[in-house]
Length: 117
Length: 276
Image 1 (cartoon, rainbow over the protein chains, first blue to last red):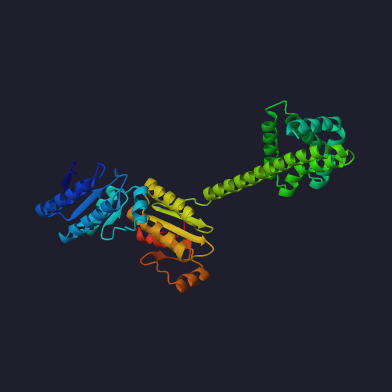
Image 2: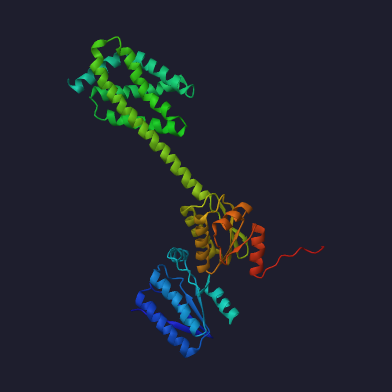
């Protein structure tokens, strides 16, 4: 199973997903992220999904759940770089990812996190 | 009676009277078309058809039938494109039957042969009509595709603000196309505000509202905020009567209001230039 690396920059955890997401790797990411949030006390999570081309309802729900978990550690989650096709799929699935903020690219996502911090 | 030989006898007979039949046929068709085509033009077309019909009937040429059908199909396609009615198109074939029947009226011994011939013309008539209908269907499909392309421009209004003027009734296919274009433009330009202008949408019912909401939530997933503008008084009335909720989506009366709102949200301001 492939693991998604989590990089800490300042008070932000940076997660760039470069693989085709499998159910197990997303669940693993969720656990890793929770542990990392406890260990570092980070205030923000930036998830870059530019390279993700396919999502299903499970992964969509997991992304929303990551947002809820981060909130419990008082950290804001920003999802950046979603592809149009992915956005359409999630909308058709009825997932609007409430609780997760979104931005067009990593730069705008960081601005959003720093602005709210 | 052997069909082939009767067809052959009919063919010989028709070849002998070619000038007379083609003349009468042309006359009938030209009257039917009410001067939309010149007699010389019609005669040229019909002479070519007539010789194909004779070749098909004589049975000596196995490609003749296929060639005849292809020629007829081509003819009815061009009729369909030029706006002829179905009757005018089918008449071109059926008039041959009339022309021949007038001739055969004098020769009583040819009646069985004529009946076989008439059945063949009926077949050709049906074929003509089918080609005509297919051509019309094709024209309608082409026009629908052209309309779909026309209907969804995405305009860059300002730095970071884009607009989609929606015109015409919104159905699933068109919303899908508009949504795709909007999202692609958001990614390409890096804009974080999008204005959906529905001034040109004649009616807003629950389905249209549903489509708009979907577009807005897809844009939100990309990190862009949508504003709906161009809501006319009657449309506002319908929306409220139907109990449609736009939730926390900003709605404005005009595109100008929406632009001002988007500018304010992105921290920009326009001022009148002072005296030079």
